[in-house]
Every structure is written in structure tokens, then in C-alpha cells.
Image 1: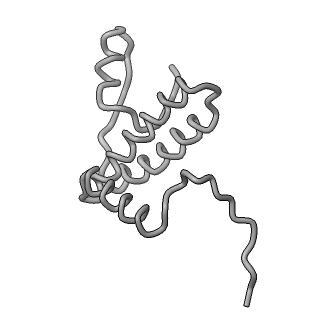
Image 2: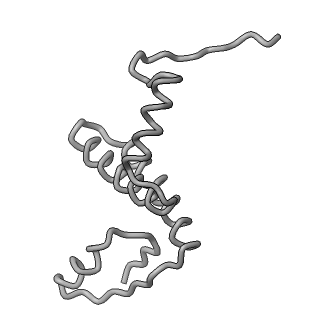
Length: 108
């Protein structure tokens, strides 16, 4: 039986159960949950980085966004609040649309 030891989406146990396979799970406490969410964010971002076409990229970005929703909720914020902060930062510092690559800044 393969061992996964990772955070999974809420309906995964139900999906596995429908296949008739045996499995085991546990519910995480808050300390374990945030640790696993952070690990999952790296996992999903790495999967995005390794995509080779737009369709795969969108699928993986959806997974990254799901993790961002969960992280926002864990930290007591809505995704709307996160978006509000993102917009304010974009207003003050810009976004990444102009593709600017900073090479160096002179020290004083």
C-alpha cells in the first residue's frame, strides 16, 4: 500500500472510498495544518513551474489558488481581503505586467 503522508483535498477520501480501496487518514490540528498547507503550496507551485502548456498551467494555477484560499482563511482573512491588499500593493508598487528585470542598483 503506497504511503502519501500529505494534505489532500476534502473529497479525496470519498473518491478513494468509491473505488473500494482501503485507506487511512487523520485530522490535523492547527499547527500541523498550517505546516502542511505551506508544504502543499510549494508542491503545487513546483507542479505549475514544471508545466509545458497553457492547459496544464491553468490546472496547476487553480490548485495554487485553492491553497491561497485555504491560507487566507487560516489567517482569518477572506480571499476578498487578500485581493484588496494585492490591489493596494499594485497601486503603490505596480504589478508584473511590464516584464521589468532589475539587474543592479548602485550602492551609496
